[in-house]
Every structure is written in C-alpha cells, then in structure tokens.
Image 1 (cartoon, each protein chain N blue to C red):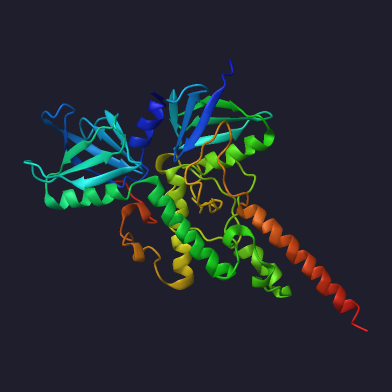
Image 2: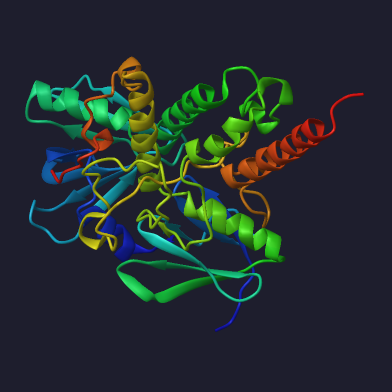
Length: 259
Length: 119
C-alpha cells in the first residue's frame, strides 16, 4: 500500500512535540534477536530509527486499535503492542529499565486518535455547559429556546464570548492560521508548528464541530465524513437570528405599549 | 492529469483510497502538516508542507460534497485535536480555576502543555 512517505518522514522528524522518545529493543519478525532502535512517539504513530541521529525513520507503527500489554518473557522489561486481526503482527519491545517500560506502556496506551478525541469532546462539552448552561444549550445542537434567556445587554456580549469561529480565512491543517478575534485569548507561549509556523503568533484553533456519537469513524461510498451539520459558525448564526428577532419584538413592544 | 474514480475513506488522520471494486486500499495519505485548498468548482486539493507544489486533487460530485470534505479534512489531524484540547483546557482553567485534565490523570503529559518543547 502506497503511503506519502516523505510526509510521514517529515512528521517524524519535524519539531512538533513528541509524546515520548528513547531507545527500545525491538524483537525481529521471525522471533530472532532484538535490535536497539531509537523510538519516537508522535500523535498516534510510533516511529523508529536506526540511530538517534538518523534523518529518516526505518519504520512506523500506527497505534489505532491496538492493546499494549506487559510480557511474560525471559527478557526484562518487555511489553507488546498487539493488534486484532489474523494477519496482524505483534510488536515485542524491551525497555532498559522498569521506569522506562512503565512510561512507554502508559504513553502508548493513550496514544490513539480516538482516545484524544474522547478527551477533546469531553472538554468541549464542559466548556459549552459553562457558557450556555447545562440544560439544552448546545446539547445535540437543537438549542431549546427555554434554556436561553434573552437580555438586551446580553446581545452585545454573547458573540464575543464564543471561541474563535471558523472564518473563511484559509486554514492549514495542523498549522493553524486564525483570525484575531477580539476577546479570544491566546495561550501564552503556545508553540505553533515549530519550525514552520508562519505566524509568529500562534492562536487557539476554533473548536471542532460536534460529531455524532455513532460516527466515530467516517467513510461510506464516495460520501464525505458524516459530521454533525452544525458547526459553531452555523450555531452562532442560528442563535444570532433568534436574538435579533426577539430584540425586534422587544423594541416594538417598548414603542407601542399594551392597550 | 487523468482523473481516476476512487473510493475515499477518512479514518482518523489518514485518507485511504481504494479502487472502486477492491476491498484493500491502494494507498493512504497521512493528514498531518498539510493544507486543504479549494480549487475550481467541486475540486479541492491536499498539499504537504515539505512539498507544497505537489497537489493531490480530488473532484467531488457536488459543491456541497466538496465543502463537507474540506471541513472534515481540515479537522482531521492529530495536531489539530491536540491544539483544540490545549485551548479548551486553558479556557476551562480560566473560568473555573481548575485543570480539567486532572480527573483523567493526564495533566502532566508533555503533549498537553501550552509551552510545548522538543524532546
């Protein structure tokens, strides 16, 4: 299967943060000797290099759907990365100390994309509950009007309190170039994409759109990823229109008092 | 350049592509440090930071489908998620004074720190 290997190698060696790095012994495929390799864990991928200074990895293990377990082996400090499926290989690795082994097992078990996504969704939910209130709010993106209290003074405030919205500014995946939204705070010293950050001033990304729980992976014949239809932009639009309408009503009632 | 019909599947941060009648993918693109660009009608392209002139072009059946793919692909990278997480963490911490990652026991992990550093 073809892969964009240059991009993989770039990702492995660029200065975006590695989640773990160090020497490990890797058992050969035919249960032969162990080879000492330099391992780098980035995101959901475990790269390994012949030497620490090597410019390109010699291999990569994609850590989706795997289990990480300790090994009952003659060798000390061994653990295995195991995949389901009959054709899948089990990778047996050995660390150089108990502490190193524990550190690797811990970081590898949490390396999957899905794990990260779960945590992100959870935090996103917490943040929305704080902003919109626990009842209704953005839950399911239906936005029951009863949970939202119209207040004229709130009109000016609410658009500002939303996080930076996805604008039409072209965005670079993994190296975000965002609009400077007034009131949106920037994390201090947030690193951008390391060497290739074009901005000088990295800014927080907009929150990802809500995804339906059943669509943890995408894919269907030729169709796009089935994401939740409401992005923050659309939500903002919808609430904004409702707000404008209510404000209009309120103004009219003020002008013509009840008989 | 010739357009070939492919089944395209976005799974985590990989874009797999298949011949329409085959079960195994021909190839995959890792979607980290890439740029998704709208080209002409119904068309978007993916290019990578280390080779920006080389574009992988995809023609969709409709403009709507094209926009859906663009939005999905822009959010597909692990790095994007990491940055979202750091942003949310920071916002929640500002609002509550508490670190929301503590409950998961992952607040010390290097990848979630604001001032990320090389190892």
